[in-house]
Image (cartoon, rainbow, N blue to C red; front, top):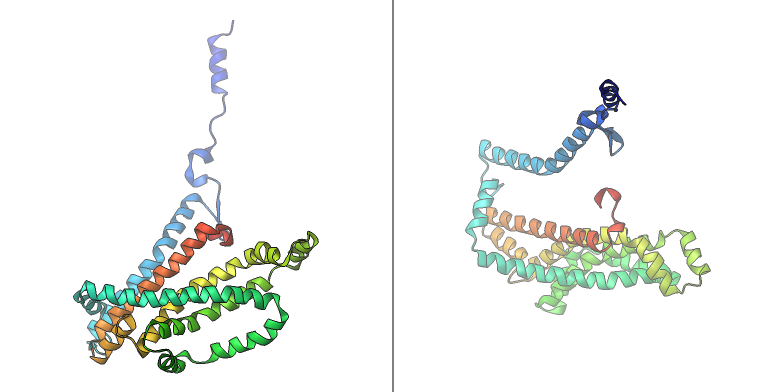
Amino acid sequence: MISQTTSADASSAVPSLPEAASDPARAAPVLVGTRFLSPAAARRRAVFDRLAPPLAFLALIGLWEAACRLLALPSFLLPAPSAILTALTATPLDSWIGHVLATLRVALMGYALAVAVSVPLAVGIATSRFLRRTLYPILVVVQSTPIVAVAPIIVVTLGASDLPRVVITFLITFFPILVATVTGLQATPEELIELSRALRAGRAREILHVRLPFALPHVFSALKVSTTLAVVGAVVAEFVAAEKGLGFFIAFSTSNFRIPTAFAGLVVLVAISLVLFRLVGWLQARLVPWSLPKSER
């Protein structure tokens, strides 16, 4: 028969939980970037990284407002953020919707046309020595031509409809997508290409299953940048010839010395560019998440 003293000693001999499990400060360190931090420090670092951009933006707005008030800058030189916000809310909502839709229509049509033309053309240039030596230099010359100087000629040639504005947006947008796609296709490791050829994969399968997947990070980087360029192209086209759109709205406000209103239109343009940029990033994360860096997945 086991005595009570023996059972008490046996129960006291059961090992207790490690101190690290009960003390969060002594838990296993977490790798953040190139440094190992405690879980609490890692959480503080994540909160700081999340709050730093909006806090920096608010600080910049505060400095801007303070400088305009302390230096008594006139609004036609540099309006204060409060004056821009007043002009933004003073403009009727119907007017904003009409101008935003007009700019978005041209920007999205030019962007879609640039994607539809640039990607197949990049495949041809990356896989054909003849196209690379003949067509690529011509495209570089076209891209080197200032679009602002060519825009009036395009408007006179194609008329005052949406077509010249879409063409101008396309000319500004397509080249970054083309260059990034060609770079990604040509950067495919040779061993992968040789492996696909050893497995008797055709040229189409080599492009679709080897080259294009490897080039997708380059392609989506260019697609993100080109969203902002599409908005810029639409605005440049509206500066030349338009009766509606944010570019027309800004030019009209500036010509009437309504500088806060023009800045309000600029704020709306920036918001549109950011939304389109985020939308492309969201599509990449949903459709091809493996093309993102590990830190962004």
